[in-house]
Amino acid sequence: MFLYPKGSSSGAIAIPQASHAWLGWQVAQHWGNRRFARPAPRAEVMAAVMLHDVGWTEFDLDPGIDDRGRPVTFDRMPVAEHLEIWRSSVQRAAAFSRYAGLMVAHHFVRLVENKTSDLLERGDTVSGRAAEAFRAEMDRLQEGWRESLVQDPRYAPFLDGEGWRINTGLLAACDRLSVYLCAALGSPFTLSGRTAQGGAEEIRATNVGGERWRVQPWPLEGDRLKLQVEGRLLGATRFGSREEARHALARAPSVRLNFVLVRPSAG
Image (cartoon, rainbow, N blue to C red; front, side):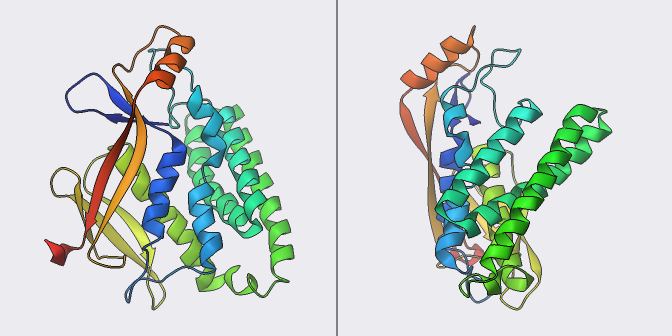
């Protein structure tokens, strides 16, 4: 869950991880042009982007509260619980497609590397060991899926090399862009895209007023892309109990946030 600030009021928009993933999928659907590479096999890559956070569905209905009474968000929760949700996301994605599951497992391995380093630097060896064990588990899953998928001509060309880097890079880029928008983390921010000629290129997103974001160099089709994400409008973000927070989320009205990505030449 993300808590998107609602102007100058004390409330916020609670955005579930599933809607965050949907926003990333909207970007992925239009990714690629003469400069930036398009993914393949397309259906499986789109599934990985849409499903990479599917394990959060139950949590976001009842996230609990922290010691300040705020709903628990994805970046402020116990490590063991976070890893279990990632594990569930991989398993559920793989139920749709082994290749999608492989991509999601790889995505979380990349994320857990940073988490492990941070935990060990803080002296949290218990959580650090749990993160290391999670990574080893994901590595084993990936190895098994690769052995199976390499026999299939649909997938064999995209299990390593540039094809694999294009696909996994797209998931990382769309996830990062969506996180920054849903969490209102500020402007500018950068992400990386694979070029049509091979190699990575930095992409910079800058807010140019309200819902509009200038993206340069432009990695998408067309000149602009309108995105939407749905959440629940909370009148307050502090609660006296978990039950109170759960009921507030259930009763809160649904709202839609819009963002527009624009090519620099589009004004």
